[in-house]
Length: 207
Image (cartoon, rainbow, N blue to C red; front, side, top):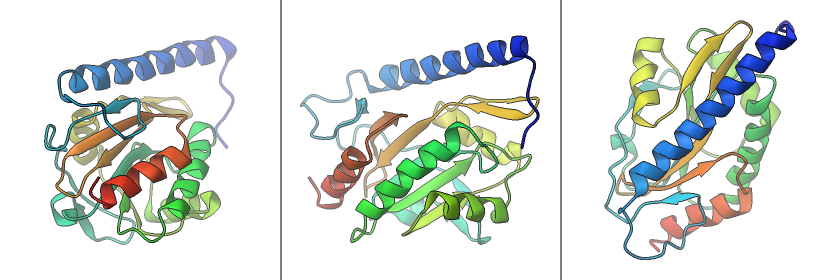
C-alpha cells in the first residue's frame, strides 16, 4: 500500500493528472481531425476512418515472456490500453470495466494488449495478480519492458507518464485497432463496456 502523501503534494499531483488527461484528449482530437468523411458507427470519443491512420508499431514481451507485436496480430481486432499493475486507485477501476468488455468479446478473435506504465515495479506476477482481481478472461497480454523500451510506445500513443513518490500518474486511454492494423477508435476513461464490446464486434464483423 503506497504511503499517504501530504495534502499539498496530493493537490499538486491531482492538478498534474488533470493536465495529463486534458492533454491526451486534445492530442486525440488533433490526430482525428479530417480523418473521417462519414459518420462512424463506432461509439467512441474519437474515431478514424478505415485505412486513415496506421497504428504505431510496437514489439514487447508479455507476461509469459513471448514477444508480441501489432504486426503479428494482423487479421485480428486489437484493444490497446495502458495500466499499472501496482496501482490501487484508478487502474483497478478501469481493470474491472475491461473485464466486462472481455467477457462481452467472447466468441470473437479479438485480443487485448495492456502496455505497462510502470517499468519500475510491473512484473509478470503482478500483471497476473491484477488480471485475476479484475476478473479478466479471454485473450489478453500484458506487455512489459524497461522504461527505454516502453517510453517510445507511450509517446506514439499520446500517453503521458510521470513517476511521483508513491504513485505513477499516467493518461488513461483505450484504443481500438482493426484487423488491418489501423486505428479506428479512441476512448477516454470512464467508458462503457457495452459500447466498447459492440464496437469490437462491429470491426470483427467487418462493418
